[in-house]
Length: 333
Image 1 (spheres, rainbow, N blue to C red):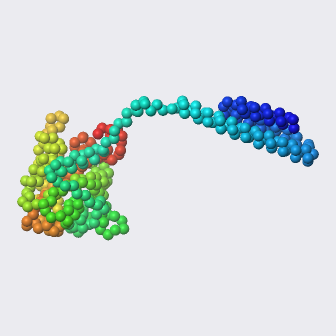
Image 2 (image 1 turned 30 degrees about the horizontal axis):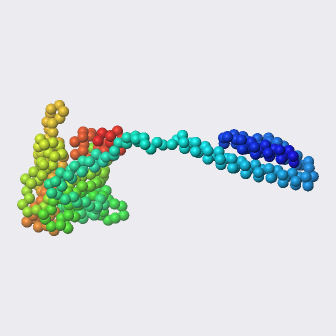
Image 3 (image 1 turned 120 degrees about the vertical axis):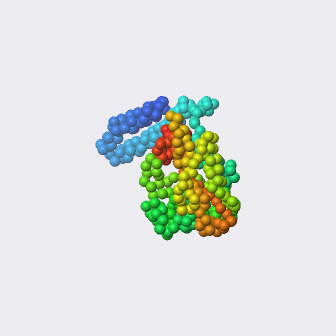
């Protein structure tokens, strides 16, 4: 018993003297581990009488309880001291200026879309938007696209599974139809948004792309108004010295229709034309289907691919770069 009392005094003194958590753990192993003097004393219990074993067991338990209390208290003190020291050494100096974080900015497509909209809003147009999942009525029927037109086949159009005649809109022209069925002329709107086609992905095609379409309906609107509008747009977007030309084309919802090219001058001094959009006078059948009198009103419409404008203005050769989120590409704009 005297040996146990002495061991307890020495162990508790060693606990109090430990100045680190590692040193404290060494004291625990030395005082209560399998090779400690306490373990050697406990091993002698099988040689004692029952009364002696009981007395020795009580004394050993008292030792362990006293040691554990002292150990836990010292461990808490050392852990707090270690935390304070760590906080002192790792303290942040809030007076030091932070590292410069470059400001974020809109994606290139968003920048170009906003510039395009600014041009038309400056001309007096309003911005109109509509759903991306659209009924065949607005996407096709009201736009003079007949039931068996190739554009309505699944090889070109993405149909929404589980719904009859609901598609992911193939252009933003359905927004024009929605405006014409709910508003009376004069109308001047631009319709930005994503559109969808069943296209394979390559350098110039994507199943998801963006458009800005425009519509003007009023009395006395002519092809000259369309040309003047597109010339003003082209000069704002591509340069004040640009010219445009209109080539005959066909779209179901415009008659006559035209492909529009803008002039350019290459780095080598060569001149040429680049196609930028499709346009035309709104077909009288479309006006009638939307409840507008074609005998009184006329109008023009145009559709511009935002990706197309971005690629032309910034010399982007592969449309996939606009969607890959490559930080090196994004940092250029």
